[in-house]
Image (tube, rainbow, N blue to C red; front, side, top):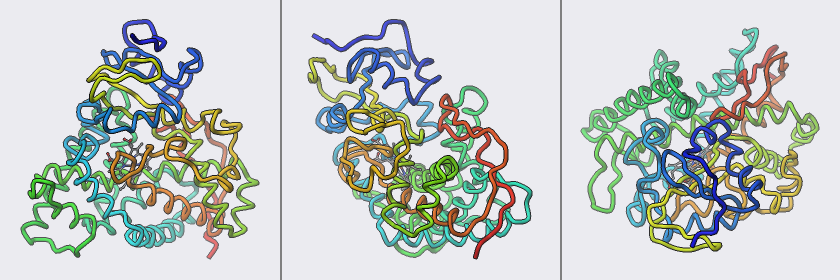
Length: 416
Ligand code: HEM
């Protein structure tokens, strides 16, 4: 018999969507429980928060991802047939592709391309009255990741492709026109990349071994078959799209630098441990990915609650990263907390929990952390700028909750 607190009412999808980052943790607090039962997406669901719940959620014996992601997210953010919806051996096989693409030397090569994009963008910004950092970083990351991945991108395509890329993560959860734009962007991008995969396989476009485009085009799954071109396009986009999305974290880092000038001073001192701690605190505090979804694989009981096979379960990432049982003064921005603490697999989950090889944790944490540190170093050491009057509030009803004006810089000067 289930003893989880229940939310009454027909459906709570709107409540979730209007406050996606705090919906689960605030209900858990009100109900005095790490989990509660509700109805979301017109079906019964269990929402959970905190490290103990996360350890259960990431047990592959108990949960599966097949059938978990709602169609509107598959048609925009994730794509259909990609690694996110696989389980067991099929997942491990596919995940190996991503783990190879993000090996440290590959990440270092990506950072090299991103560095030169920062310099040329910043020199251009000196001639502008003001620039919107978010838009600029989306563009510079699109250029760099395409160069790195060997995805050809002509200069006159940069604007279009970077907008399409951003629409996948920036407008997916939008109601109405934004969501439709996001769906359309995915169709265009997948078509573009499917053509590229075909060209690589047919020898019309030569790529070096090991680059992302080659690794995806020539990846063979457990059945010893190449991926269907449509799925290969989804997986190549699974490398490009989230790398461009690091722009969101970079804007959050710029926001944190502005909001906490004492950190900026310390970051100028060339202390790599502090730089790392600062970036981790940005990832812990700022609202990017609210929650992840899975379905119960086989019936089980936990914490006195019955989890029936097939039940939709949501794990709170944002709230778990601010769980007061784990984090002292969780709402305060304190990079120092990371100086003497290595976070565990289930208490710090900005990009998912558990471990990435055999589970669904994000393979791109090395990319995110490296590009964030590089951006912070550039902003602190090589860029003079003002942050003019603007709306710096984070809109927590939006996914992701970027600063309302995209973080505007003015009076940009390059400090060589
Ligand atoms: C999965 C967040 C960057 C590739 C995930 C998950 C989250 C996440 C929350 C789901 C974890 C789960 O289902 O349990 C982020 C954030 C990023 C980021 C906030 C910052 C921009 C990257 C990068 C890559 C990447 C740079 C490039 C390789 C993926 C893939 C998955 C994934 C392929 C699916 C993994 C699987 O299902 O096994 N990410 N990610 N992500 N991420 Fe990231």
